[in-house]
Amino acid sequence: MDKTRNEMNGNQRMLLSYLELLVPENDVLMGITEFQSKLNNRSAPNEVYIAFSMLSNAEITNVLHELTRPF
Image (cartoon, rainbow, N blue to C red; front, side, top):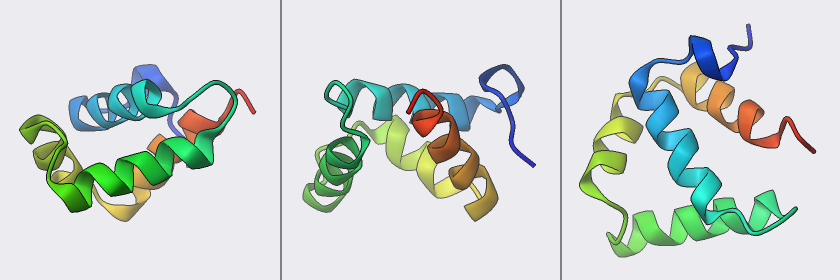
């Protein structure tokens, strides 16, 4: 079941906000690639690591669905 932005928990909202900062205009895949790169390089903010590690697969899927909703 998809959750809208208002129904997401704080960790989901934090991850979504961070991903939105990384997404160049109309290129979600590049934003996700940048996110993976930042995770691998340990250059993402600590809060993002904590939020990401506390989310279930279903919650991460909801974040990605919300991120791609405009497309």
